[in-house]
Image (cartoon, rainbow, N blue to C red; front, side, top):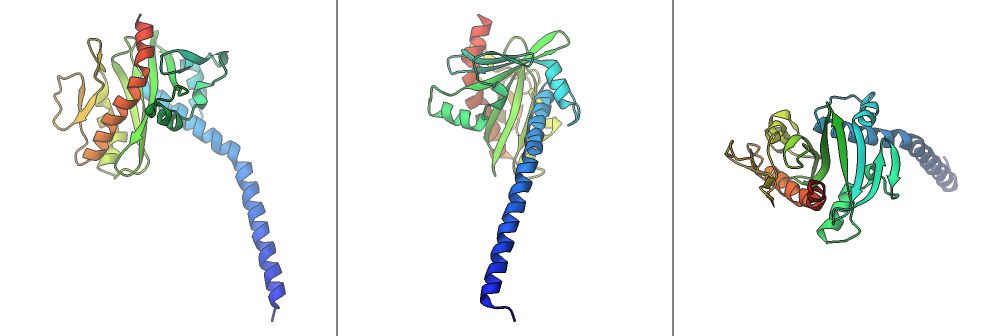
Length: 242
C-alpha cells in the first residue's frame, strides 16, 4: 500500500502538471482563437453587404471592400480612422472596439463611449455598416446593419444569437427574416423612427417588418436593439448629410 505522503505528493504533481499543460495549450491556441474571432467578425460584416465569404478568403475580401473604418463618439465626431488598412486618425482601431462594453457606456451617457462604422465600396457605390447588440429571450443577440449612401435605406442586415430557441427566436438568423429589412428606412423625413419588428406588419410601411412566429420576446429584442443602437449614429449620419 502507498503511504498518505506518497499519495499527497503524487496528486500534487499530477495537478501541477495538468495545470501547466492546460496553460501552455491555452497560450498556444490563443492566437488561432483570436484569428477565428476576427475572421468570423469579418464574415458577418461582409454578409451584411451580401458578399459571400469563407474563413479562407474573408480577410482578403474584407480588405478589398471595406475601404474605411471609423470610430465615432456620441457627438458624431470621428476619433479614430483606418483607411485602406492604415491608421490615419487617432489611436483607436475601430475594428478592435468591444461593442458590448461601448454600448453599455452609451446607456449611461458616458461621453467616453465610441462605436465603429464600416464603409464598404462595392460596384461603385458606398454602403455604411454599423454593428448592433441586444438581448433576446435566452441570451445575447447581435448583428450588422448596412445602409445605402442616403444613410437611411437599409440594403442588408445579418443577425445572430447565442441561445435562442430553434424554430422560434433563432429564426432571426435566417434569410427569410433578414431579407425583410432590405429597402426599409430608419427616418420619416428627418425624424428617426428605426424599424419595428411586429406581428402582421404592414408590408407597405417602410418602418415595419414581420415578427418571428412564436418568438415575440426575441422579436421585441430586435426592435429594442435597433432603436437603442442606431440612435447613437444619428449625429454622425446627420453630419455626413450636411
